[in-house]
Length: 215
Image 1 (tube, rainbow, N blue to C red):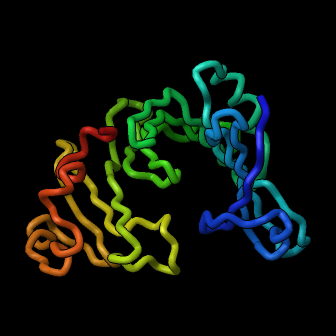
Image 2: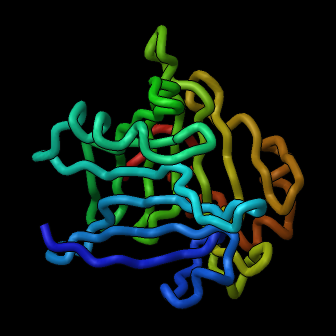
């Protein structure tokens, strides 16, 4: 498979290879040259004591042709500081370029967690939940809203930080809502005129319930 490489800083802003020395943390992203699909994210950090660059771990996005156990074996011992590796598989897509993945997380070579995640075409996380390793039930359910930068203020101008975050209870109904570092109940959120002007509730049906995760 032919690939090409991009680099981003810790805020996922694209940088050039020549700029890497300026950053204490950066990511190396590998893309399929034919499809431009993201295949791997490798995370790096500069050791402040030795000044050496160390790999921390990363994420791998598998195609239907990839062998999951083999890919896991080839990666879980790479890196330091816990060697966190996430493997995304069972990809689903929609006509907006959004993708849903099952994923498993390994730390120090051992299975640490399972999850389901949905990403937008900019690889920002739209929705997700954890999967209990013993019961298989969904926990920690959430959805993220990324607003128009001309309407919403982004902290540090970082558009990878969601404008609004919704959490959901066991039944998939909205539990709590977080907006500009404030926590709202559904009633208080809907009664806030400032929010209503920026986020028309009736027009954003996707966030009314946890399911479906991928429209």
